[in-house]
Image (tube, rainbow over all chains, first blue to last red; front, side):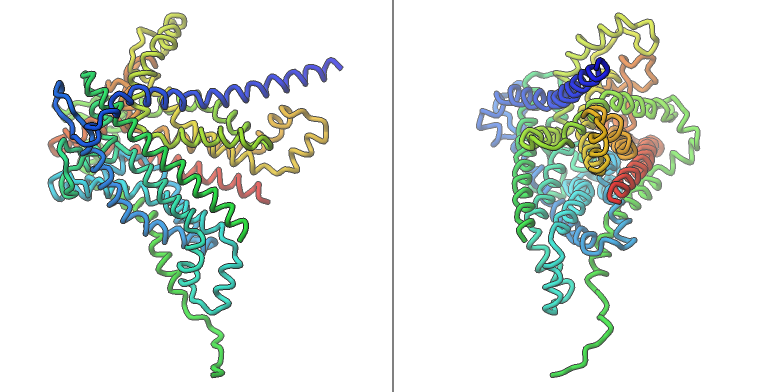
Length: 284
Length: 308
């Protein structure tokens, strides 16, 4: 009797510990969001923050327009490379899953996800900056594309795998070529999941700082020329946060808020799309 | 009209094309390592293996050694793991349970959003909020009371090895808990049901049956998180203090491989200095590659065993 009582108490106590620790895990999320919003809000409530570029300390009306366009430009160009390649690679992994080659490609993608982004920056510097003797937005895009590729590959693979084999078999039974089945039948059915993956990779790339330090490099002026250095939101946050001037730190918090809003909106939206996809695939 | 059906299928060209494109990831990985090897070559020729054990970092005399940075990287990552592991596994246990899907969904989403927040945002938060708080409420009290233990000695500084470890702990938590949750979910239902049928409580089932059989996979998750911690750059750079030495106490400033590169690479001139920085990157990438491959194989074999 006594022993069972101890067991019951231990059960309840450890259950409590598990749930308390789970709540502890959410505390940093709440704190980061709270401080980013409360400290960044005063900066973003001025319209100039989104229309002007950075200004020297003490001159009012500074903004991050150049960083927003720089981020959009670099991530956009990176997507043009990484998304199509990643989708086709992901389709291969899902449609021919058993082969040895697929195993290697899958492992390599997972390893690439965990590769330090600073090392990817060094790689892009050697390949795209050193030969041309100047930093450029294109070099930044190159580094970001490397980081996006494995995310697109793996999410595409899991989205395509959700499509039941019956769809492929009916296509093949009607005499469609293998590529038509994969690209015109299976891929459209898996589209929401594939788009989710592309969006997640865009979110990840938008927040990366380390690979841009010596590729995109940053630029205090508004520029749309990817062959020249380009500004980026994370670079602005990093640069201004480390200055001793409160007005610049304020802009860093503001830029951080814009960045967090961008990344979280993309994440929540893609999550919604994905949930619908899984529901639809269940009905197929 | 009645053409004979050819028994041999035509070669699957789509497979060849898609397979070639799928080579992009492995090829990139190989090229990254090769390019870094080539860029680091001048430093490797000059210093040989002594680079790994040297403690100097002096661009003026062109004397470079990696040991303090390697120490900082390894120390921050392991302290971060020690902090994050209990929390991460607890989250995984809580999320892997059945029932109350709505609450679990909210918690799971929260943890995944934690992974989505950019590194630099953690950095700003750590620099202005976490570091002052930790100095006042953790580092100073601990070093005051336990300062006799050499590696906990004071006076603590606001940017330190410990502060960097705290941020890292937060940043690797999502990896740790998401992968562990999947591994715990993959534990065969029958095992749990047997334990419950024998009269075990929920905790006894979890602690004596579920966690032991998920052990290899959780270990894999921990190593995967270690890989993330080793390579993390920006947030760590902002709070570690950037001092190139092996600190005597975890409350002193230090440096990591990634942070040295981030801070110095754009300003490095001469033939040897940039190459030495790239060699730091090479050390970093080879260590994380090894760690990641081991972790992935562990997690996969755990998942495969559960499937049988």
